[in-house]
Length: 444
Image (cartoon, rainbow, N blue to C red; front, side):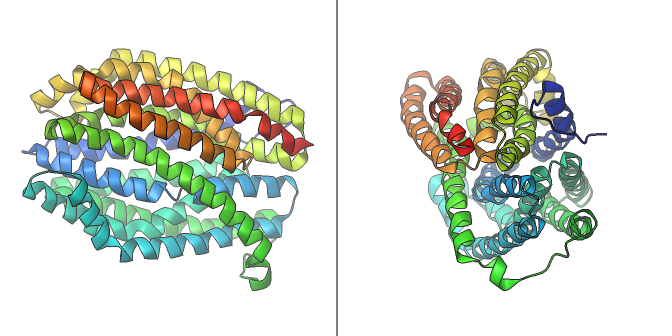
């Protein structure tokens, strides 16, 4: 139903059709955050919500910093897929699996340092600190599975099987929600419950889809996945992979740190603003994951167009995906205009948090259509593996954003935090637009 036969002129309908399953899977991701936030927001103290907000955001930054395991996989797989080099396609996946396991092992080993870093950054009560430690001590062991999910998702996006990548994420999210509800509401594990929910759901999902992927490759590409050390550890290809991954790593850690910066700036205004901004960020994440559906589907098409050396396919994909993304951003803004308060009421029943959150809703309504351009350009650059420019654009954007946010927060309090986040989205789009012509050199 969702397969698309690509031609040199990629239409809006083709992009939309590929994006449909990603819409649902991407919507499932922030729903996990909303459910976790809601479970904590309905407990007797806001300290549970604050602890989960800080610790889950911090760990998400750590894990998302290695988003190159998805993004780098998409770009390389899609270009290799365009060349019909299926053995190398498998080698790309296996190389990234090795990298994922090494990174996950290091994250687990560094757990005490990670906990100490959080305690140094945030000045919160000892009870909140205790909850933070409980969450991190459990969730950190999900790193191997969560990073493996990145690679598997990137593979299926790269070969334009968006329905499979979406089913993977939906399975992970539904299991996470079910486990978290059970552990928190039935077993009364509060913060530990949502951490265990992520841990169990990640490993079950990886086991299921690893087996599926193995047999899918055999049946689809007539290649048996195996470690061929000489081909797998080809020095030239490893250097290329590390170069691409390092640039995406810098870009991603800067991006995720920018959202963590919102949480940090809120903590300087008071603990209640950590909770308020956490709730508002859930709405931003809903819009971003939804808009990222176009970016994800575009990544594979852009990489495929480069593998085929089709300039016409690339230009039509870029133009039509940007238009689709922008108008979808407008629809999300209209939706938030009418229903954002209802979503907030579902997340928390603490009246003071509801009242404070309502005050800043206008920013959440403004951001989606502006941010859509940045998200879509991200996808285009990732598919083209134009990661140096992606990195440089993010360095400029984040540096400017940090300086502006400090000044605006002093002048406008929490309004300044959200105004600076809006400016950050504009900066991301502007800097990537500046580098856009560089991608066309790939077709020469």
